[in-house]
Length: 221
Length: 221
Image 1 (spheres, one colour):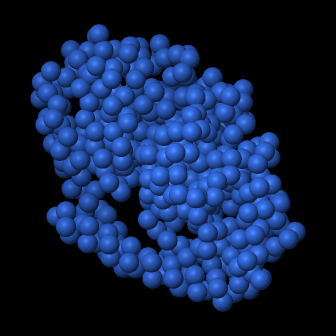
Image 2 (cartoon, helix red, strand yellow; image 1 turned 90 degrees about the horizontal axis):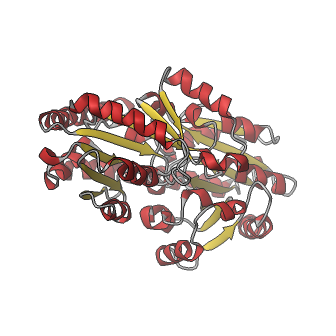
Image 3 (cartoon, chains in turn blue, purple; image 1 turned 30 degrees about the vertical axis):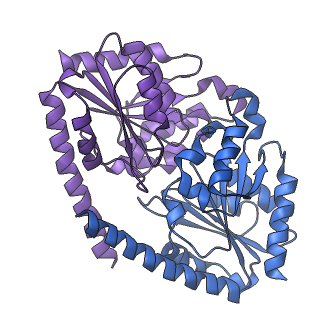
């Protein structure tokens, strides 16, 4: 039974990867730079995204896709910034997959979108296994989660091209060992772009935005 | 394909429920009160559990089972309190299921265990779908996660018999609307036992421990 289960899972992931490739080709053909933000529940995905929109919406034509098990709270918050936003409610599913994303894309005008922000479902495990076709995969960690998370959720930390550590304004109130955290990240993903930030106070956002702009410009040029 | 996928998922859940029932019967026959703690990554499951052990290990014979995607960090911390603890590493899987638990139980002497503490994988979604056979399912929420989590993760909030809101010592540093949070919980799970606590400062733990002792004594008597 073990073997059969694994084989089913592998088939699902193969199928997902094929659709992710199709999404990627669509983004390439429309010159859309898609970024997939992943994080634990409450790490601050939406707050970081709202900051990102605030910084970049005059520079790029932006749109958003928001994944949640239920509600349209986050897509509503994105739309309130003035960019088009689509909500994907996954029902019980604990991650976005390429098929869900592919179903949401026709609701956006990708030809007029430079930057597409994808907010994944709050979960440190399964989103790491389902490629979406995005150009960048970014993890948002946060201080209150604790410094041991790279060790406990290695696949997520291994699979991203950049990481933000959010809520650094709260470091004084937590026993968060930055060296231990960084060492865990470095072993799993050497040389990963790392940005300590506070979406609340704005601390550290400039460096993150500068890096993101370089990545986007290099794709869009 | 949609229909076939749903049917596979239902079969898996049916099979899980059967094994959960077997676990439950084993716990009943050995007079073991099993508690399944679920939470988001970093909500403080391990800290709450260590406090629980500290309060109750002279009153009950305790043991622990700890689920994580990787590492034995949490089981090591549990074992350091002097109680027997078994780690389940799920590989990529984002929740404990009844089969995993059933495989771990022979490593413990249930005949000499009054209270079995099960620490689920850090995830607000899938653990809610997989019964383990535990007598109590407890959710540990935390202030830094934000007040909108009942709305976004309804199945988890609906399926538990008690909830702790951890890290209340940090309320002054977060925009956490307690009324909004409580209203979300109340709609999903009316009359749910609710304990605001801080595992760090000890605030609120007495009420939680008193409630837990009543539940355990009523089962064990």
